[in-house]
Image (cartoon, rainbow, N blue to C red):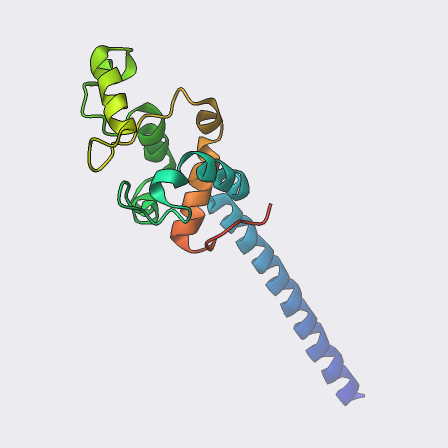
Length: 157
């Protein structure tokens, strides 16, 4: 009987250890989900490919005209990223002129389109509905790429 009792005691301890392990991994997964930036990586990839890849490259690793976003996003939080992309990046114009339809703004846009400036300055995307509606998705995609949780290529929807 003592062997049976020892076996029952060992089994009980082993099973209770498994239950604790299961609960701990579930809590860890929930915490990891909370740490992820808000937004959809897949939707962000789609918007990125449509609006950003032409300058920053299909994999966000930069080009002759635009920097590697994977390096830059590591140091930016969501708030700073949204501010930089939607409001004004580096137009070389005062904020009032960058937002208004002025001859200086129009001339700068024309220079950018004709690639007269090198490197090309990034425009503000606040008036672009698809970018502003999905800015957190773009951030989620770029964050996942910079952290290594999303590889190059199309993410799984």
